[in-house]
Image (cartoon, rainbow, N blue to C red; front, side, top):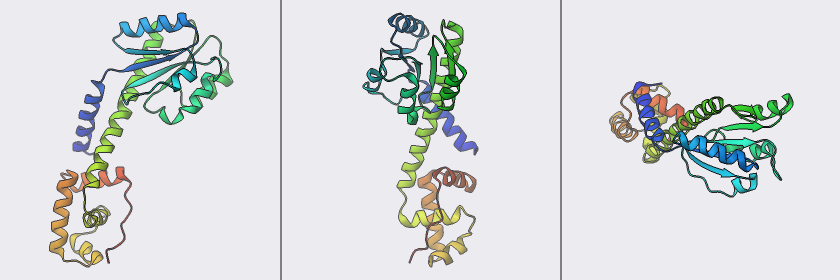
Length: 225
C-alpha cells in the first residue's frame, strides 16, 4: 500500500478504534445473558443483550465497532438462520457462536457462513474475551477501510467529467500528449485538468493516484466527443 494512503488508513482506524465497541449477545438463557453482560462491562465494553433472534433484528444498529455472541439454539429463528439473515453485516460485526452442544456439521456450517469462532459451554472467560478482542479488532479494521473508501469516493465525486476522463487515462500510463490526442484537446489543457484532478483527489504522486483508481475500480473512460 502507498505510504500516504497507508498513513491515512491508520489515522482513520485510530479514530474508529476510539469509538466505544459494543458486544451484542443473543441467548434465550437469562443467566448466560446476565453473566456475559457483567463480564464484558467489566472489560469496558458496551453490551446489548437479546433473548431471541427476532428481538435482535428489531434493534437498530449504528456503524461502530462491534461483534455478536450468538447462541445456536434459539426459539423461533435459530442462530444459524440468523447468521444467514445478517450475512451482509458480518464483515463489520463478526459472529462468535456459543452452544451447549455442538457437532462437526454444525461447526462447519457456522464457519462457512463467516463465523470467526464456535465455542461450547461452559465458556472460559479468557477464551471468550480473546475471541471478542479479535472480533472487535476485525470490525474496527473493516469500518476504517469503509470510511476511507467513502472519503475517496467523495473526492472522486467532486471531479468534473473531463477530470475523470483525464484521471482514467493517466492511471493506465498514458502521457499528457497521449491523453491530449485521445481526448482531442491540447496538452496544456490536459496539464491543467491533471493538476486540478490531483489536488481534488489529494494525490501526492502518480503511484498514489493509481492506488486510488484501483480502490475505486475505475474503468477506462470513453474519449470525449
